Length: 260
Image (cartoon, rainbow, N blue to C red; front, side, top):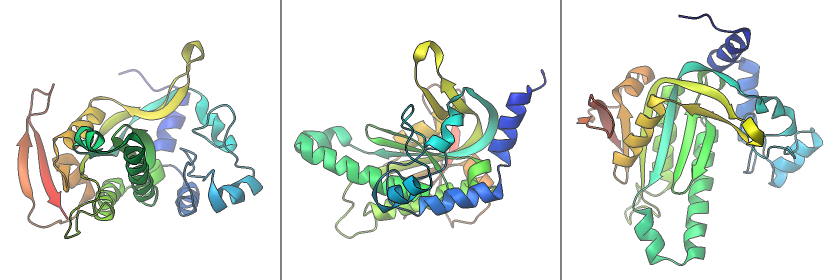
C-alpha cells in the first residue's frame, strides 16, 4: 500500500483529530443566528450573528460563498480517507406535496425544513454538506464533531423528527425519514479543474449507503446502520432490526429502526 503524501497526512490529522479549540469555536458559532453559514467554521452570514462576524473579519467569501474569508484556504483540492458518520434526511412524498401546493407555498415549506434541519445539524457539530431538493445531508467528521460523532448524528436525527412534528398528535408538518451510517469515505475538497467550483464533501460507497437508508425509511423513522449503532455505543432500547437489500449492493445491510 503506498504511503500517504505530506498533504494527505495533514488532511488526515485534521479530519480525525482536529483541534479541541477549533471544535469549541465551531460549536459556539453554531449557536449564533443565522443561516447561511460558512461550511467549515459555522460562521453565520446573516442576522445579528452575521453582523458580529463582519466585525471579526469573517465575511462571506466573494470567491466561494460556501466559506467565510478566513476559511478560503479550504478552496484547494485535497483530502483523506477517514471514518465518519453521515446523516441523510429525506422529505418523504415531496412530489405529491408539490402537486398539492402552489410553488410559493412549497418553497416556503422547504425553506422551513432547511432551516430546522440546518439548526439541528449545526447544534450537534455536523458539517452541513448539502441542501438539495428534498434532502439535507450532514457529515459528522471526528476532527470537527469529536469521537462521539455517531452518537451526535443519532441525537440530531431524533431532534429533527421531533422538530418537524413527528411526536405531535396531529402529525408532522412535513414528513421526514432519516438514514444514519458510519463508515470510511474520502473527505475533502473536490473539483476546481477547468475553472469549475470546488466543494468540501464526502465521497464513496458508504455515502451511497447512508443516502439509500434515508430513501428506504418512512416518515418518522430513523434507519441506523449496524455500523453506526455500534460506533455510537449507546442503548436505545428494544429496536426493530431489519436486513435491507439496497440497490447496487450484493450483501444486505443491517439496520435498527428508531421511531420517536
